[in-house]
Image (cartoon, rainbow, N blue to C red; front, side, top):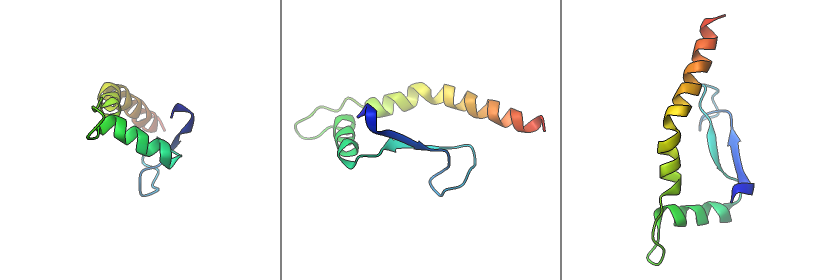
Length: 74
């Protein structure tokens, strides 16, 4: 799955506002990641995507703040 991670430097509507979209380019990997994260009747969920989002929230906010502050220098 790590070999098929992709990102776009815009939001879901295609606007360039500092946000980005990250996901898998291969639908097979996307479905498997969802099953592993959310679990199924036969697979216990490990919530790796949810945990990663929570763990990186402060770093993402600080990176966004740094870019925002760069705009003030102009």
